[in-house]
Image (cartoon, rainbow, N blue to C red; front, side):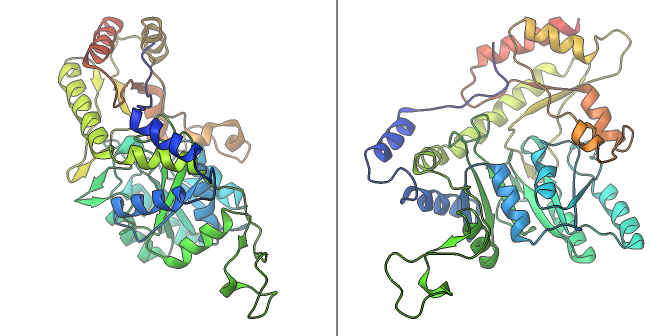
Length: 387
């Protein structure tokens, strides 16, 4: 089976992890701050906070922005559930904004219209989670302008998008957001096995997330409340109710090693995407469109079935491709139609573009270590399955 995504592990990665295994620190050592510094430098952000998953990073980002019960978080239905769940972890209500029919990211016009209605109703969101779906950057400048006009905070869920850029600005610089979150799951652009990171330009937000990722405990004597000017060497203080969201040095070493190949990985993924575009153009499919000014990291290559009388339906096509050894997938089933969110009152028909997308979409295999021969298998299988 050719998977839709797969990590690429080199001898350099293995050596980096082995070096940590032979060191004095498996966790809470020097490898994590080294990884944070490398990512911050790569994306042009002053601060980076490494954690054990992007889900944890989203949660910490919401906490740092003081999202709480009675507040409202908005995101898109076309995303992994963590983009919405992070609001629920904080006790906030969650709502959704439909997607753009071309980019499959959040629709800025739909966001603007929903904000106008929300302002009239006195129920504006406190936080918007803007998702860079499949590695395509959102129209982040426009979102940021709306944030200033309507007074909400912005988290970029860039779990798919490290290495991407918008008008030359690296995703993660936070030029047009408060916090950006990355994922280093094995199917993502680079991996730390499991892991995530939040970047920000705000030193206070970075400090809040750093404190909360490790039980809310500090060993910084300048911040102590219970001790005088000469605390004992063993002193520490829990100052907030935090979590054990730390990244290990093993993960950080792997991530740092992988980061050195980020540009190569993104270039390879874009080359495979262009090759798909060329060889699939004659099929009854809608292919992904990269917006002007965007560099996509192409975490995913998604096609949508066109409505024709002769084509198989999406489930038939999915099963035919799986039967031919092509590990297609679906990204994503709409979040608002998951049973948990239906129990909160969401119903079919509320976000028609996201729902139509989910009825038509199939994710094809794409990963940095893919071979052209494997891609040719996918292309041939797709052509046969559609005939």
